[in-house]
Amino acid sequence: MQTEIIKIDRENIDKEALKHAGEVIKKGGLVAFPTETVYGLGGDAKNPASSKAIYAAKGRPSDNPLIVHIADLEDIKKISKNLPDLAKKLSDAFWPGPLTMIVEKNDVIPYETTGGLDTVAVRLPSDEVARELIRCAGGFVAAPSANTSGRPSPTKAWHVIEDMEGKIDVIIDSGRSLLGLESTIVDLTVKDPVIPRPGFITESMIRKVCEGVSTDPGIIAADSNVKPKAPGMKYRHYAPSAPVAVIEGKEDLVTEKIKSLISDAKAKNQKVGILCATENEKLYNADFIIALGCKDDEAELAGNLFDAMRRFDHEDIDVIYSEGFSREELGAALMNRLLKAAGHTVIKV
Ligand code: TXA
Ligand code: MG
Image 1 (cartoon, rainbow, N blue to C red):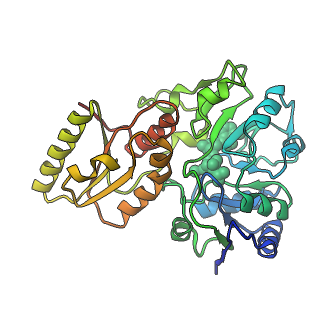
Image 2 (spheres, rainbow, N blue to C red; image 1 turned 90 degrees about the horizontal axis):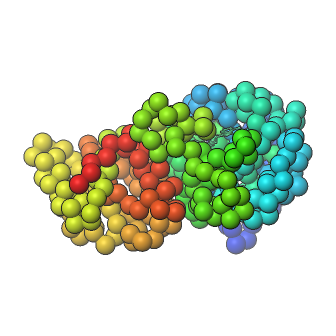
Image 3 (tube, rainbow, N blue to C red; image 1 turned 135 degrees about the vertical axis):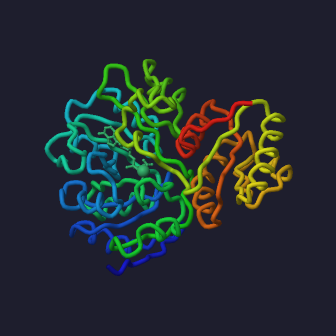
């Protein structure tokens, strides 16, 4: 398949081009598009064949449900039933934005889209290109992240091109995603809402609207007996090809430990990659060092993580060592993704 790549400037949106991309989705085709979190791989959420095509393009197990993207607040009512009052409170507080709500689905959304579940994940993105595309596509766009299953989520168009060129109809290129980590998911189908995937909308932000909310312990646990609530969280994810280990502890002990790990790896002729805070970049003598951002700026650190993972894959790195970062607030989302990439290999110092 020939993939059409369309550049769209967020400052000066070409509506005709998005109309064309919307028609492609309406006819059952697939379009990768930018959102403020990561790039999505979009198809018509009401069309079972489109959802099947999404799973095929990603190489994703079809029991892993897709998020349905909408462009207007009221549209959640058209695809759900028994919508709790809390959904309205949360959407007033955080939509458009990086929050996905799981609610009961109605018959408009087929089981092919929800991986056989009676619930549906719904998100209203803030990215203007995304919203215009969703409107042009009929209002309901099923979209997982636009990466091959198991690879890091795409935050730049070249990440999508790398994974999806030749497999889908259109890729819309609008530069880098503003945030760079997938949306926070909150499950409203249980008595006390649970966050199965942390993100930029943190637990404490949600608690201001909903006191009883908690984070699913399965997401941080290394213990595979704790089953994560979002089906997608159980798969190996976000990982570069080389093994990753995270070194956590007091900062000077962490940097000393990483220096000694670098020496050990070099003695074995291994090519070493390092992920660190900008402040520590100069301390290491490794083959490929990526500074994610300043250590107190979790938004910057999180926003650069997936791009860093992909860059390691282009450097034939044998082993990657990462500094650990704060697990507070947004740090919880960052460390969730980093620890998954590391398969929970943590060295405590
Ligand atoms: O930021 C995002 O959410 C991005 C952009 C494109 O919007 N999308 C995204 O989709 O990250 P995906 O498919 O890569 O991750 C969706 C997660 C998966 O872990 C999936 O298992 C979970 O949401 N999920 C979707 N529907 C669900 C449902 N009905 N019940 C429980 N988990 C669900
Ligand atoms: Mg994904």
